[in-house]
Image 1 (cartoon, rainbow, N blue to C red):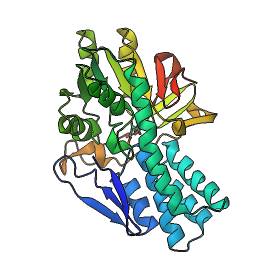
Image 2 (cartoon, helix red, strand yellow):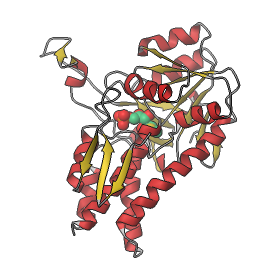
Image 3 (cartoon, rainbow, N blue to C red):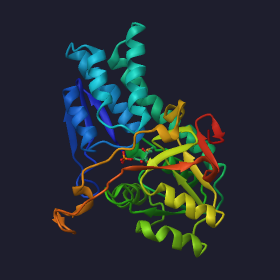
Length: 313
Ligand code: MRU
C-alpha cells in the first residue's frame, strides 16, 4: 500500500478522503499544497504527517523559501501529532548541518518504514496464536510512510503465521477505522470485523477481545494522546483485564511536556453534523468535535517502539 511517494520534485499523496472506493493521488508541487493536504486530512496519521511535513520542507527548499518561515507555517497545519513538529525540526537541523532538505525527507521516509517493521517485530512477541485484536482509528500503512505501527504489529503476527483476527472500531466522525483499517486488512486477507464505536465495550464484556493495540499522536509524561474514543476503549479494556498496547515510534515521544499540556485539535462541526453530505441533526446544533483524547499511563500495558516495549512515561 503506497501512502505517498516523491517523483520529479513532486510529492504524491494517496488521497485518504476518497478511500476505500477511489484510489487517487494528490499532487503537491508547493509546500502550501502539502499544508492543505494535512489540514484536509488527505494525508493523516502521525508518522505520515511527519514524513509529508519533511517533504513540504523539501518543496520549500526547492522554491528558495526561507525554511524557518516555511517550517512555522507547516507546523501550524495540525496541533496534536508531535511528529509534525519533530519532522520540521529534523529537517532544519539537517540543513544547518549542510544536508539538503530533499535528501533528508527521502531518508526520513525510508527510516519510517524500517522503524515500523521493528515495531512489528517487538509487537509480535505479545500476540498469541488465536488472538482477536481490537484497534481504534487507523495506525496502519496509510498513517505512516508504509507498514504501520498498530497494524504493523498485526501484519507481523499474521506474517508469522499466527491465526489472528481483527476488530476495527469505525472511529466516528472521520471513520478511519471503517474506511482505512478495514480496507488495509482486507487487502491482505487478514480476517477483520467492523463494529460501531459504541460496541467495543460489549465485545470485550462478551470475551471477544484478547488484546487492544492502538497508535499514538503523542506519548508524554502521564499518558498518550490518540484518536478520540481511545480513552473509552482503554477504560473498557481495564474493566475486563484486557492488555492495552500502544504502538508508536520514538519520534512520537514528547519527553519535555506533560500529556495534559497537549493541544487537542477541535475540528469542524460538519464532520459530526453531516453524513454523506446530508445533515443528521439540525444545522444550528451546538457541536463539540475534539479529534483526540488522552489515555492515562495506568491504563496502558506497554508502548511498543522500535527500541522494544517500554513502560508509559
Ligand atoms: O486524525 P488522524 O486520522 O490523523 O488521527 C490518527 C490517529 O489518531 C492515529 O491513531 C495516530 O496518528 C497514530 S498513526 C500510526
